[in-house]
Length: 539
Image (cartoon, rainbow, N blue to C red):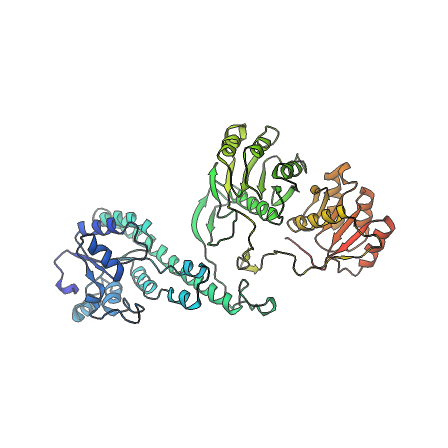
């Protein structure tokens, strides 16, 4: 049906959606407002089966769907109806001359490309067939002409669109703002969609990490696009004077960003940063592990035969700093563990774990005063491979940095550089300390004894100052501990200070021009040193 054939005052809506939630109620509401309904393919069938009068898009275009549905809405009869300026007589005359009717409302959501790309076993052909072409084109046409056309890209938009239609006569300025908001969201939707496609193609080409290409074949693309969805405003950023928001990216790896909140107040900017840091630390261990994080650094971390033992070691690492801390565990929290955690001796802001039993939630939220506000995050089972396509992005003024995540230790070696070899207990503690050290701000020093952190020196400008700070935190517990350093020792002073604390073994990457001096210092003090050949700075 062309625009010239429409009854006076009747407007037209074009509907073409893959997500049909809310579709029928939305279409009925449009029909009640005297809209003619035009729809493509499966959308038209759904409307017709619900008893709604609908015109097939192919009837409007006079051209059938072709190429297995690749071409169905790419036609001037539709795009002309969306793009024509209502305030431009020449545009409206052109529509009339061609028998094209104006389209006033568009509802489109796109093929499920992301789901197709993430589906296990999906072939390249299957993923490519889920790249939507007509949908983004329609959305962009409608959004460009947002002074006259309403566009919805999400079923959640339907209520706002209908309210805006009702406001057109009573409050035109409010309706115009509503159309502009929906247009802005529409352009974000197509931008995010294109970003997901571009990333998938770049990974397959070896331009981004995460695909089958060998490490040395990765070539960064000339431009980088970042997709983030499900945005939510936060109360503020790092400080009350800074506005902030949180955006979630798609993915399958369990993480703090996608965890389910079971209880507690809204997460803050700093809560999210610390919850991420704590969970990424306990992911390092296959055995039960617990970590307490403050200001993005672990103040306690331990492994144990069971989660209770791990928690006991972690909270004992630095009980003073743990006040107001963020806790992560790599095992579900049951009633026995919750009973240990829920004591008045500690105050916790966030606890993130794979899951919480019902009894554990009850104990943690009612068994102690601070439980009323503690955030409980269930991230799902851990233990899978890390997502190497999930990159680290750091914003600078005027640009941003992108890098791979520092996951795994596959490119490392373990060479004993000293005359004395570490014993079995020392070896286990050295390996544990090395994994923890990777998650401490550089310059990083970590002291470990019997599978638990006893002292941390983080973020100091001089490495020996980090040793001094870690020793101060450990106090008498430093004697008999081992030490990890995230980068090489530029001088032997750190080794001499470690020896004075009673530290028995050291793990570090090596690579200093003065390595021989540090090794000689260990030999003089009867200490063992393991060299890994790889550093783990965390700025």
